[in-house]
Amino acid sequence: MATLDLSTDEVVEDVKPIVLIISDARGDTAYSVVAAAAAQFEEDAVDIARLPDARNVQDVNTFMDAQEEGRPIAVFHTFVDERLRRDVRHALVKRGIPAIDLLGPAVTVLSTLTGVEPSNKVGALRDRLLVNAAE
Image (cartoon, rainbow, N blue to C red):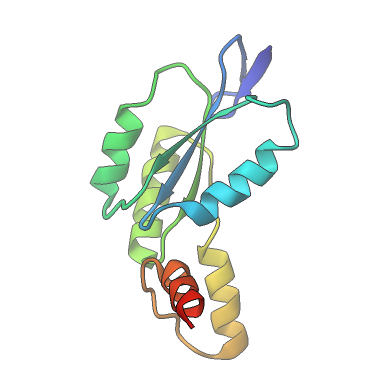
């Protein structure tokens, strides 16, 4: 199977792409989106790897450095901290790796809509679900 390396626009033969999920929490939100998108393709069309609990761009760079060279890579990420989102975006652009910020734009739209600043609390959805399940 030939694939397109999005960082170079070259066709790569017999190399399975890898989708990296990077989050400052567990990465469940990003995993759900990536799994739903991947379900539109052949089973096992891509490998998926997660970096949960990323606290800084150094964590992300270390994770990226550990990836197998020559594999097409894309990153989906969820960070609540705007500075971390920006730093990661810059690091990925420097590496030529396509990335999608799954949380930032949604938080910005909801903040604009409600006129309320977000809490920027890591794991807020998980915590809310745990509280609701306990009630």
